[in-house]
Image (tube, rainbow, N blue to C red; front, side):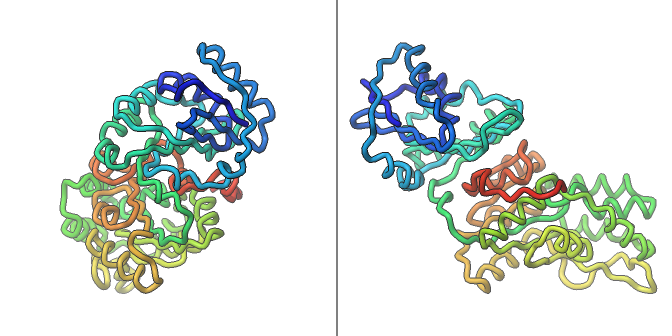
Length: 385
């Protein structure tokens, strides 16, 4: 369906039109001559609603049978622009009213729009906005973060090629990323030093302490904890919401997934079994006479070690580093997030959220699929985590 227009739509008009346009599967904004091209597989009344919205705005329009609609539908939007802004609005939230005005101030052209979420009550809204000037947008991340925080939505800017479908290597931190706790803090509670260790962990994750030295300090306080407590903690690890669906969908698309954790391999392997991760690298607890010695076997997995492992795995499995994705929440994840082709701070500490290339702060783990360009219809839902 198409609408011939006397002039290109202004951003102020687009702000009012967005609720209707977001019901379409894809929207192409053709500049010469100005045409609005919409495609929807399910909404037969969409054209009428868009027409009514154009009329309410006082805009003249003429319905147009777009003879090459198929060409618009088949051409990937990432080939029509060089930047993409992914917007995720949690269920019940609102699209920031300043969003279109902000894009207008930055003097970038909106080339197209793609809805990734499903329509219907109780659904989040996920959209991709395809824009024309990555060079002009690359330095705008901080302003977008401020807007996202104020409206409690996720706004992530990336080159449009990031949406190109391809097999990727995807590396996850574990604690507070794939699971809803810090395992070392759980062990410390059972050792009677929970508050003390948790305070050090929080400080280290905020980037206030060196990870290696703080890790050794925390480990020393676990000395003497009986090994049976390890099994008790592992039996009650709470998965992060969306972890099962995320990993199942990633596997179905052929991605290679790994856990690179500054936590412990015993627990990482439990998580691996539960959600289906291909490979695990984490610290190995040293146990002597059925008690924790307060040390780990081998080299500590810190930020630098994560980068080395990510690089080695990519080379071994035949991935270009540009086709790697790293996801984490703590300061020790920042080197990995910076080294990967796409680094994502997930529900992260303020320093990490501010520094990482992308941040998902309000969506569940499944929001990572939107960031990769996977529509909700391509997400494999299974039983709750």
